[in-house]
Amino acid sequence: AGNPLFARQLLIEWTDRGWLVDKGQLTFGLADGVDIDAAIPADAAALFVQRVRALATQSGHERRFRDTVHLAALSGARIPGELLFSLSGPEIVDYVQGCGLWVEKDETVRFDHPLLHQALRSEAAERRDASYLHRRLARAWLKYGESSGTDVALECGRHAHAGKDWPLAVTNLLEACRSAWSTGRTNALDQASRLVTDAVSQDDRVADQQGWATLWRARSFEVLGRIEEAGDCFQQAFQFHSDHSDVNGVVESLIGMGWAALQFGQLPEAEGLYSR
Image 1 (spheres, rainbow, N blue to C red):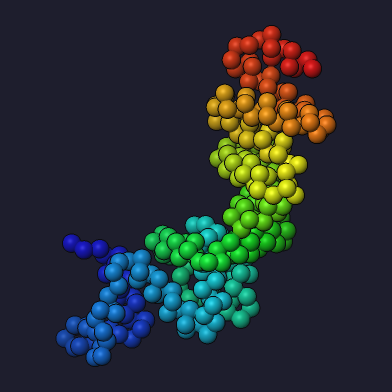
Image 2 (cartoon, rainbow, N blue to C red):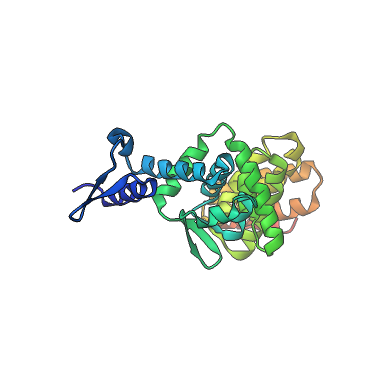
């Protein structure tokens, strides 16, 4: 039966390249001189990559175009159009916008097929400068958030983490934890707390934030119903905050420890924690 998506994309590619010609009597075929082995890639993903490489060459700014689509792929399935077009730069912004790779909806864009996104994301992740791309994205998201008034702490933090910019990652991931907690976004809290807990262990410049990172990890476990893990993290946070004379951190940790004790039915212990 074959793959209709592959066949459709193949015809689009051949037409764009001028390889598909009218043979007459409502039949079409490959133009003379076209290498059939080069014309038929191994799979749909390879075909999508070929399509993007051809567009990059046609842009006249091959490296910049390739960087733009890779940055977009690393950003996610759907991103703000303003962010995408700011990444491209003024030289090719019109070309990027009209190259046919995107589907626009409201003020966001996505790649015109999930397989295209997956193929480009895999290609971007394998680049030697992938960490640099993530650092670029962290700062691009930060700039977009400032101009739009949008909460982008999680997006900025996760890209800073992937790019190993630990101070920027910790600052934004802690803010993402606070935002997720206050708005009840469980998945966002889980992701942000997991990343910030790792980030504070990577760089001495942010090691003093370990107590708050651990406290947010505890709260993530709390809302996920993982009581034992939450209790352990609240105790670790309490110890760290105590060692660093962080009164607010100590109080928040004690409240969490009291909650964990209540969940285990340890009423006297909970009362003692709450009254400290």
